[in-house]
Figure 1 (tube, rainbow, N blue to C red):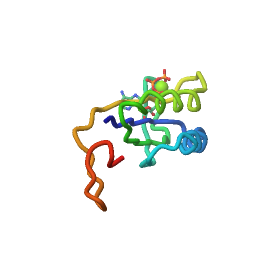
Figure 2: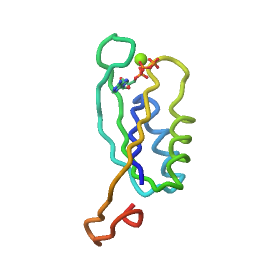
Figure 3: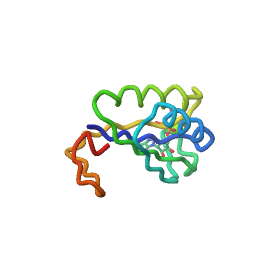
Length: 100
Ligand SMILES: Nc1ncnc2c1ncn2[C@@H]1O[C@H](COP(=O)(O)OP(=O)(O)OP(=O)(O)O)[C@@H](O)[C@H]1O
Ligand SMILES: [Mg+2]
């Protein structure tokens, strides 16, 4: 299992979410953020999207975000991938991939 953490432009956010919904992923968590990258022209508003995915889905999620969020100009954002030790679904007690 992986956590995919994507930082995207605000103006691309709706399109990214629609693409993820259309893929049928289990869920997302969204945080409004500000940040800077290589070009230090102050903090810019960004959206951070966290997604838990199993090993079979992770590359598809990354490809979908890259396809929709890219403008090709500076500030498109980044995608980070983390390994997850466990996920626990609070309501049912399911653990691991079946908790996604
Ligand atoms: N090293 C970093 N650590 C954490 N967040 C980062 C980092 N670099 C960029 N970000 C986040 O990503 C957002 C967009 O970054 P951006 O795409 O400008 O990255 P960049 O590395 O400067 O690339 P670019 O060449 O496209 O400008 C930033 O506003 C910030 O929120
Ligand atoms: Mg930048």
